[in-house]
Image (cartoon, rainbow, N blue to C red; front, side, top):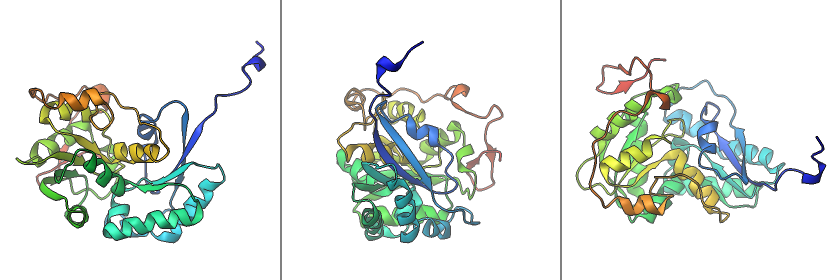
Length: 282
């Protein structure tokens, strides 16, 4: 069959993504991306350190970000985002801004980070009080709370899993359980931290139950990167992205049931780690 009459593939707009070396959710990022946009990923160099404040600092060093941005520059991205929550909040608000500047030193295009995107997303809803759930240890969760406090956002409740590796294996049920425990009265929104934590399918379910915006690390990362070049992210039934879902938050709540196992839950369920949090088998 002769396909030359098509002239070639449809034009694509490109967004560069700098991800930590252990990032495992490339496919989840693409779920928020419209068909005419391509993501170009570069990973930071491997370091033999578990997920911790030390790792967050290592993967966010300015030279590391510049090197990754330089590699991405070969494909001419219209924007570059640093897809790491802990790496972009570990230096506080000033540190996050400096990371964006380091990227722009190499690629003169809009530069965003996950933690900066979180603040922008909270501003979309006028949210100043937020519940936080994370897969991290206490020390890294504390650092996220400090970052939000610097930005004038109060944490009203939180839960964390205490994990230091293979966060991408956490099942949706563990995320739902954390949300139930972490949302306290007075919260304006819920934030699910870590770009290595699967969240796409749980967002609509949690918003239906909690009647508040539910933001996740990967969601806000792609939303902000695309918004910086005038393109809306896609995501039905997610209040940040879907006006109908946003207006529905004022309706009556409905019970939060377990998500289908097709979404990726372990058939055996999560294991208890002895600290009061659900930890998946690894």
